[in-house]
Image (cartoon, rainbow, N blue to C red; front, side, top):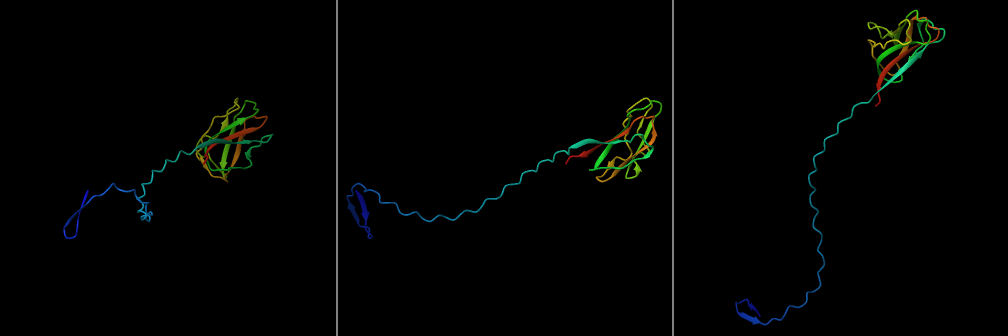
Length: 167
């Protein structure tokens, strides 16, 4: 039983039966407004750049036969690099005398003070000689100077060993 009151406070009692079934659902209401975007996160730390890879290579000069004294034809660098050493070779020598070389970069010796490449008598391969001038650019040219023949019956060779960046 339920008790109801009128607007004047009068009590009215009613007998009420069991509740009836629910009615159909009403239509959905409109969607609410879209919320404000959140604050962007902090950017991550950039990675470390890896080391530059260096490649070692060489230019090989070989003389004509018979070998001539003096400055020989140019050969050009196709990249920037650093000269590590130069070494002379005598292909067929008589073993009685020393072969002496000079190496020029753009017309000037790279050995103004350091010991120039040579092949001692009775040897076929000289010692690796580090020059005073060690850097060169793409387009620079080298020339080999033959100061003495070393009693060769064949070619003279000179290896300019260098390194460059592969990146």
